[in-house]
Length: 151
Figure 1 (cartoon, rainbow, N blue to C red):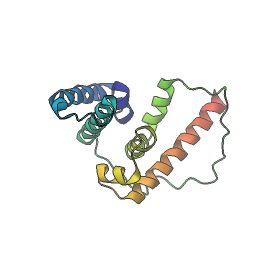
Figure 2: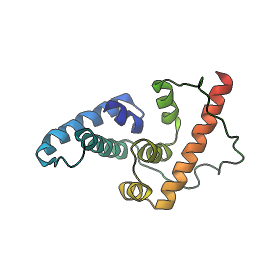
Figure 3: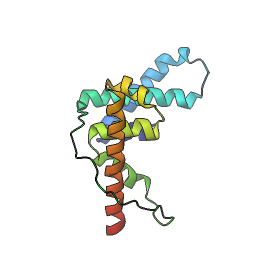
């Protein structure tokens, strides 16, 4: 669950704080668990919400559509079997994304939230969620291409 918190928060101390607060909420809410889904999924959702709350406390979200120019003519990089990044390297790449991009990417690609759910969670429009995801993917693709060239 610490990894879930680390996806949203850059500083390890902030992720640990969110983890502790999240587990406190889990224990308080344990009597309300209805066993309709997996226990792990229920805990994960609490951790994601707590990480988002911690993120809002630490660094306000600036989800501007104009943060970065639209990606132009990105070369498509074929996936190769020899390009295996360690989890730490992937986390480092995610941490380099602007806060808004990273948050939307994590919620959509890693946690499985839909754009309407992300919009509601973050108080943004669905269009902004889609745009942030697209820009996050483009930035990650560029970073991966650079990593492949230099590595």
